Length: 319
Image 1 (cartoon, rainbow, N blue to C red):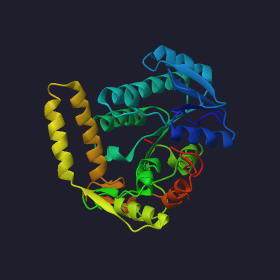
Image 2: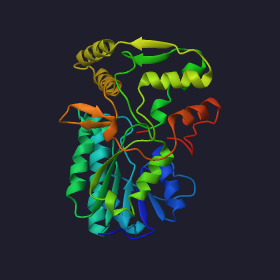
Image 3: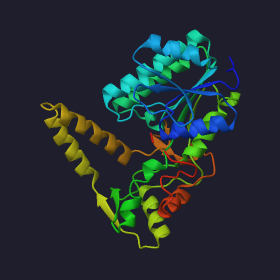
């Protein structure tokens, strides 16, 4: 089935990736309706419908009202809490998928995450559960798994500018990624509407250039600032100790259990690369990670240092 041209229902339009996708859809002449969660602030100038995603009838009515021929979802749980992940990454998406099938929508494009390759966390399991449902659905689907976003690698820019050392887990070479800008990712996502070769496929995607370790990112920042590189190493064992302590306290305190969950998420990203995982070789493979676009992390860092706000080479955005 092919989507009706010029008619898209966009989920997650209030996030930074979603806003970039909205701009790209408009630039390509698409008619876009944004489906928003209750309490969300509509993007400027956008046609929006607000729904309770926990109410399937509400979702179905909104989808029919949109007249969309394709769904593009950049929606994700905001914090990784298990309850939120299953409510948003799985249940809310299921409500939209069922409504889309009932309305005869021909295409569904899902922004997922490359970290689901090695699922250890509940939000990853929730994403995979919906991915499986989408793959079994009788419509054209594309599942996009980006490697890393510029925003997620920008948290230490202000710290380094203030003269502080760049923080590393271990020696700073435990992980690597090929980050992609919001603008390039938006172009890739929207391109799936009209490219049959991207349909019925799981699509890992990164940005241009070689994979960057955290140490390389820090060295890049210091070089742009004209300062000698200074690093402070945080042992992974320290994170393990914190997780164990919070986990023990979590048996008696829901608040501590939640903090333990967040610590586990932090440890995952500190120790796992965001590249294609070769399950047979049991290693991450930079050469198997596709690249797309032209925006580089170095240019993004340079823009931030120049004081160009949260610009992501065309307006900024995370997972």
